[in-house]
Length: 295
Image 1: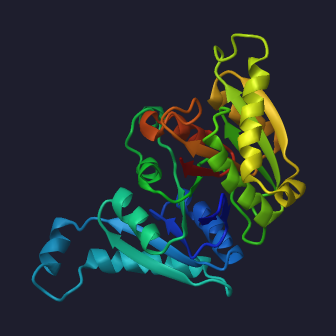
Image 2: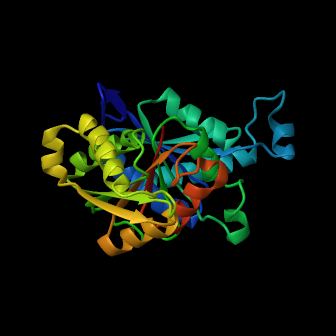
């Protein structure tokens, strides 16, 4: 994706699908392949690894390739072949290094890009701690990232994935940046948009404050979204007060949302920067993919 003026465009050169070869990654791969096909972008099927000691001994000072590298390339090639369709190029891409460094770097070298990855989220203990590979990639990438969590149903390879998109915001002006990307997806897939404004319980302490906040956000959004996009997306605005995690998941279930869009910022009531795993817990529990945009 790139930004032309104030509005991003879906002119992807590459979709970077980061896989660990797990069942959870396979569903993300279907989304990656569809998005690459729809935007006529190449699909980079990527895996990041670290050489084991035995493999290092084979490769250092020699021209031989270790069995570890061969096995991983075989897995990547098979995954690329599984996702290959006539309209896209699926390229197996083996990366040596830390995923949080080499996956965003691959996206940078092939930008404008979209990173797509799956996550299992782990158990309750893991979800409460920083340490998920997927979370680290989201924190370090400057490109929009689509994460497919464990609650997302398997995608049919013949079905466009997004018919109704939810933008979750906390009324801040900067949240309109993420909203603009949501509109870009909505235009591409002719999807409807819901704007869910989530406020913490103690945010509204005077009469008229809720109306003031709504007006400020809608004004910022109007400046980014062209009229023709509004006509296509038919946006509907909702207001909720309480915990962002609960209110967002309730809306997704009630309105049959296909894609959730979150802006990642330090001061956001919703995202709490990835530093606290607030947004990542939503990603893990959401029954739809989540597009995160760093503000």
